[in-house]
Image (cartoon, rainbow, N blue to C red; front, side, top):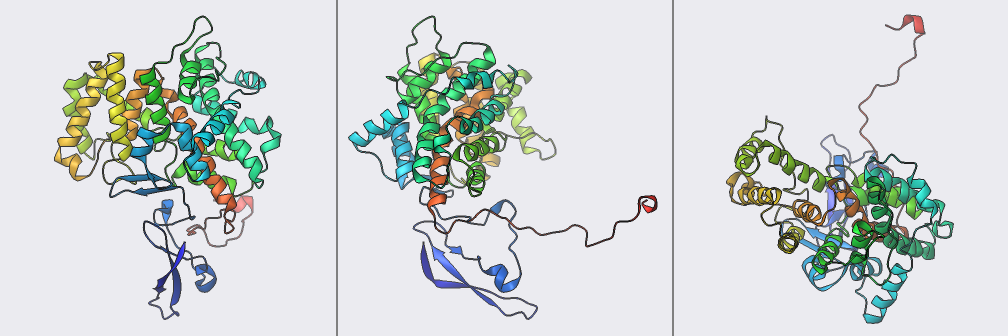
Length: 437
């Protein structure tokens, strides 16, 4: 970051001396006011619930312009990466800062492929869970449990350990997600097959069985790969901030990523596409397409308590660029599988049409987001709704690791320690038990 000639002056109406604060410029986006010395100079904190106006770090990985609907990984537009690169190229970019050349890509692909197996003991770990456990509960345990098996890559302050852990996590997440799915349905696990692509291997582990050869459908393979790319990183969101905060204590990379998985589980974050599909199924039970108009009127009524899931975004105040790409993929997958006229998908299309045409939603910029379309695509492929967030965690793992690596390598990083505005009791004395009312 670059120190700006501009400075911010904080003045007080009670006569206290004003304070001059430095301003830093990033390569893109808003400038930041450096308040690191604020408490020492004034004895005061800033108050920013949800950190909506606070830059907690400097980062060179992902840039979002919510007003323009722009998303860049290391400077590259998401639209170009999703159409011209595969997921492992995107992983390389996020981890190392540049897209790989042909030799680097071949070497990186081979490194990831060699680590797709998980320790056989993980199967016994899985058996401790109920069959009907939510896949995210299982994944949180499995990812954290990796640190018990790979002691040679648990030192977060060792760059080589972090790189080995990154490769292992990227490689093993598809295996763990597929194992969680197979365990839930009582089906045998499928070992990885190294000659397949990253997405193709995942589809085979999910839907193949030992009785017959599984043939990867290239349309579904491409759709899965695109889902992974679009979800690979998204700046300082809740789960990424969790990984950074957890990692700032010096815990091992597997534990930090497990914390990210747990945070992602929430319906306001990674669980949004699951909540979106559940909403569509609720409308279908109400009467399907014929009831969409009635449902949307309830959404407009603040007193109804009905929420529209899969539309709008905390950051994007324009069309989510990922949603446009996912919409194309959605149409390709539905056409490939002959599901264009499936009742639930027809319902989704009607919902989309109303949201894009109705002034109420247009004025509030409630455009369909990536969760809306990715949920439809995953359901069409055959992925159960309760596994959607697991797919998200699989894809986001590389972003979490890249952010964690960046933080550890930053000489200015410190253990996270947010402050508070205390509104509780002032000091008071404990009364004897018999005198308490």
